[in-house]
Amino acid sequence: MIEWIIQSKESLKLIYAFIIILSCFVIVIRTNKLFKLSEHQGIRYFRNAFFFYGIGFFIRYFFDLKYFIFSKDYHILTTFIFEYFLIMGGFFLLYSLLWKKIESVEEEYFTSLINSKVLVFYLIAFVIVGLDCIWKTFYFMFFSQIILFAIIIFISYDNYITKGDKGRFLKFYLIAMILSFIAWVLNFLAALTFAWNPGILITIYLLNIIIFLFFAAGVVRITK
Image (tube, rainbow, N blue to C red; front, top):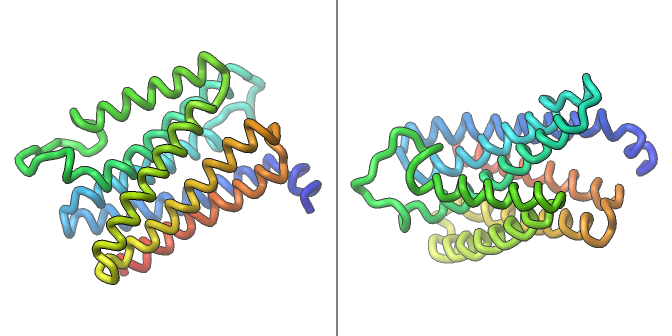
């Protein structure tokens, strides 16, 4: 089975990306409607996270011209763009939990994608991608995301304990964040210890699919 998966990896990657992009699309559409009804800024930034994830996966797996032309430089460019969008997706997840402590009530922004507070995360993401580009590695991304999701787990667990049964989505959120943390740790181990072992990568892909489908199912259930 593993040998067949390895031989069919290019086609399976497209299916993998399509599932994640579709999940992101559902999450963005549903949460955008919920934001318009509630005007809750946390939902707005949560929506942005999956907007970035969806665009990142689309660029990496469907906009990568390596399937049409043999351009190594172009493939490297799309890979680092993909990394940038992944990092920003993680930052928006964190921001969706902390926005009340960062923004004041009087502050109004034309867009939640770019403002004076979020701009800091854009710059940090640019630095992380730049370091990975210089050293030709993904370790800086892995370190940043492992630390980031550890913080998110701590905050989301505290929110879940505080609100209990009142926060129905918080349980979904906490479980998904734990799975995301595990996925980033496995990514790091796959690169550092197992030299991108195909079996480990398959496990990571399956875990990523579970995470995004889990989030999509949770959003659909909450927004019914």
